[in-house]
Image (cartoon, rainbow, N blue to C red):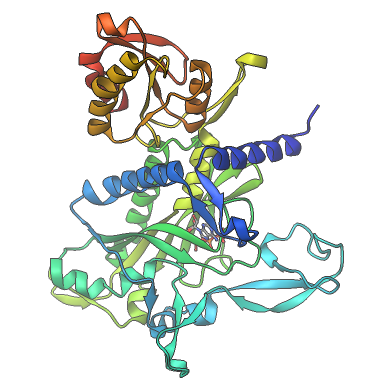
Length: 436
Ligand code: ATP
């Protein structure tokens, strides 16, 4: 009998290998041996991530009246990070192995005194700031120092005044941003879970001080709604209240949404009450017309990591069934986020009349309508189904000899394996109905 840990390791190996084999995720700089903490998205990875981001943007920006989008520069003046407290505080306490010199984050240790690599003694090491430092321009002067942003949040705070001046929003209102963030993690690990370059989807929601608890609760629920909407297994999501002393330097209340990953229950997303910490530090305020006074709004921050969303959605969607020749693994993505909605296949690729029909009457119109449509004529039909199952394609459409006379195709459902005959004239509607 395999023990639980072994099974979970095997599951992670299967996911990592599927991601590479099917073109979702590759390791960064792979042909040169890889660069720790970096991963590249392949064709289907980009498609899935775009769908995740679009679904987030649609729910939290496009369908609301009180949210303003922003796309700020990654490089910002060093004063942003000094005043935000990151230059002094964005550091993790570390320990170092006396023998092999490997460094570990104190909060991620399995054993407090023994090195996980060589068993040597662990000793205190100095704090390590996780921001990547760089220089802007040719000058050697210290004023040229800048940092790759470790969170997208500051890009919103520094544009608070611009947004208020341009749109005159009434409280409460929010700003939303999707973008890259960089952290020089001491020990990047667990595939795309802990990396050095990643994307965040963040909201800064500005409220009156007395309303913070109400909106904290509101956003907590909105976050849960979205997780369910994109197909995260909610039975594996747990809310953890972060205690005093363990929260980030800017937060007065934080809830982490943790997920049961195969490598342990770890943070997926979070929600923080940032008080007026950031606006105050940047010397920003707001004229509250209702009250006729200048105030500093308080901030609720729901934050989501794109990579962690991707990994969690992959793990939630992964299924295996059958044995021997019948065995298959498939990704049960919601059709709204699946990288491919349907694959179009002529039964035989060496029969020009089938290929011609499949191409002009099925593939071209579906491609024009849905975009996320692929042509698959490689190998026998069984192999094509297995391949599309692993990509998570909800529908495989096969054009056979009957099609030429009855203008109907076979549509095979990914999850049940059931096949249905559908008239070509009705295909668009059929698929539209299934995915909406
Ligand atoms: P952790 O405790 O895991 O280091 P954190 O509490 O520092 O995470 P936040 O600062 O709250 O994370 O960042 C917001 C979100 O960004 C996280 O909930 C997570 O989804 C994502 N994130 C943070 N650090 C990383 C990383 N190194 N790799 C991938 N995603 C990350």
